[in-house]
Length: 131
Image 1 (cartoon, rainbow, N blue to C red):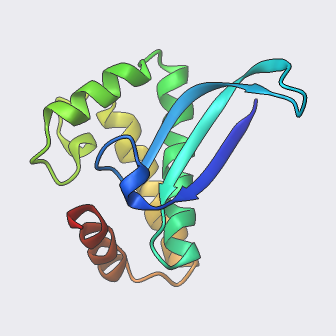
Image 2 (cartoon, helix red, strand yellow):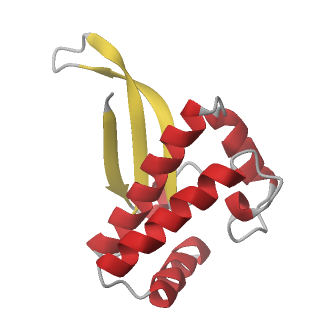
């Protein structure tokens, strides 16, 4: 399993999301294809704990959706079809709703352990997606 996590400026996300994952091919330093992996991109939020929580959420959600055969393009299509939803994965009709809710529950648990105020975190996340 190869997973690469990058923290990037929000404007470079594929769409208006704080965390994203996709399957990618990766190569060694000489450009030789080595295999496939997962790239997780996380919007920079100015607090490493916030970025960690988003990365953790994406890592868990990707594993669960892969395990259950839910294709990433279907997830992205759903998200793009619901631009007015604050959190498309929380919509019961989302193809990855169960996986998203599970990842959020774990994210909340770890936020508490990191001393992150969930309300302040949510506000920072909301501001980043409105920028």
